[in-house]
Amino acid sequence: MKYWIIALLCCGMPFFVNAQWNYPNYEALKKQIQEVAANKLVEKTTVGKSYAAEDIPLLKIQNDKTAKPTLLIVAGIDGKHPAGVINSLNVAKHILALPADQLNQILANKSIWIIPVLNVDAYKRNSTAASLTSGNARTIDNDRDGRIDEDPEADLNKDGVISQMRIKSPAGPYKEHASNPDYLMLAERNKGESGSFELYSEGRDLDQDGKFSEDDKSGVNIDKNFTFDYPFFEPETGDYAASEPETRAIIDLIFDNPQIAAVLHFGLQNNLSVPEQFDQRKASERIVKSWTNNDAQVSAFVSKIYNDAVKPLGEAPKMQQGKGNFSPTVYYHTGKFSFVTPSWWIPTTSDSSKNPINKDTAPKNPGNKNSDRFVNWVKNQGVQGAILSWTKVNHPDFPNQEVEVGGLVERFENNPPIAMLENAGKMHADFVVELTRSLASLEFSAPKVTNLGDDIYRIEVKVFNTGAMPVYPEIADKIKHVSKMKSIMELQKNQSFLSGKRLQLYPTLQAGASTTFSWLVKGKGKIKLIVGCPTAGEKTLDINL
Image 1: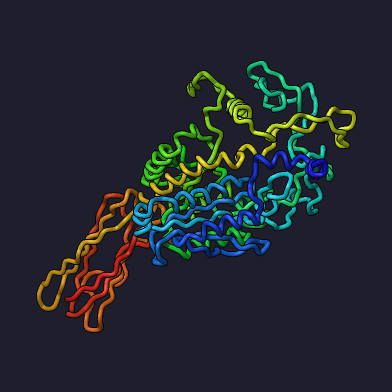
Image 2: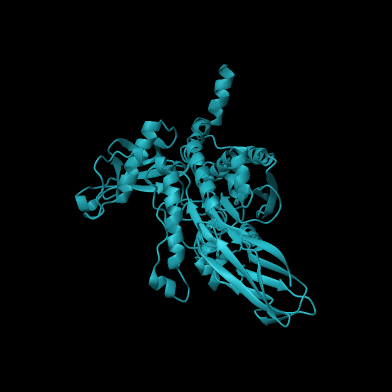
């Protein structure tokens, strides 16, 4: 027994912190993915290789290989968000556990595909690291000073995790939280508060550039490497847009599978709790940066479904999308409905604020409200390892100053102990089911053939969108490479068009709307007609004239 305890102590603090956090390592994660793939309704394949040549898994939940309107779920793009990875698998498990008749009804005309971890390199590295970092396995010069990895993370107090570092300063901007002095928060100067500390991430400034551990082995953050509003010359963004194999793999998947109707990203942004808004000015610019008016209405509809599904989690954080992110690229550059959510956040029931916030009153520091919520959540849920006690260290970069290490462990802000994800996974599975059911669905009338004499025939087919969403986003009509509503009519040699064409494209069909396709054809015989859209369903009709 004595030797067992000594062995644990030799492993250091991470064992005790991670025992509750308990996210699976990479090998255990692969095993979980394989367990989901063992279901007869799941086909496991890959979308490509990571920079370090690891397979990027894709789980296809479908009842056959016929292309059907598909909801694509993507997680694990930013390495700092393993909670999204676990929740994507939780969603898969809950969906596959639905009653057989209910699941078969969903999969009769729809498919659900899941990429549980796109940035495989980050997950593999982070599962054994002292802190979470965002990027893949590529070696990059984060601070662009011509040197590589010269300022790595430094565990100054040897506790096995990277936390914070505070330095006493009479003019410091940070103060201790009233109910937990180990948590520092910004002092509100406009309320007469004063701070006592400067605050940094735990580390060293080996290259003497005033930044601490900023050039570590974190690679390219895939969620900053996409093509829409790509941020040039910023840390972790890569040499150019879509420079990374992971970025290209997911975009290629969307382009190669036109049946993908909508994409749901479990990531560190949120456009579901608060829907996208139509901005006339931004929508009219040369580079469009606003959802169209009709698409914004769809966003509001989906947001209502989402908020109803996750209501027990309380008010979600407002997490803005940034430059080079995956979700806006999907909407603006691939023409798909694109939604993003962190899939878990600290429930508002942990908020210590007893008075409702009046948004019309004088400005307040939202960071303090979030600080209260985080501190109370840690206390009420007994979360171990999220806020550490301060310990003094001798820091060569701050001679003759009092330096302490401890405070917030960043990974807990968006990634709770894994057991706390189960309820959120169930709620998001319910949302995924409702979103899948809401996707556009086309119904086709029987062809109406009218003989006009002299072997001339009018052919009419009426198409109805019986789903709750449009066939595809309105913005897709401006993107040439998106598969549109179409009709393809194949004539025989003795037949010709008097009106209409072999291939005709049509604008998106809104929910509950219908349209009639018509042609004038001269000549008797059989005609083959393909009509519809990959994102809502296609049908092949054989017509005799």
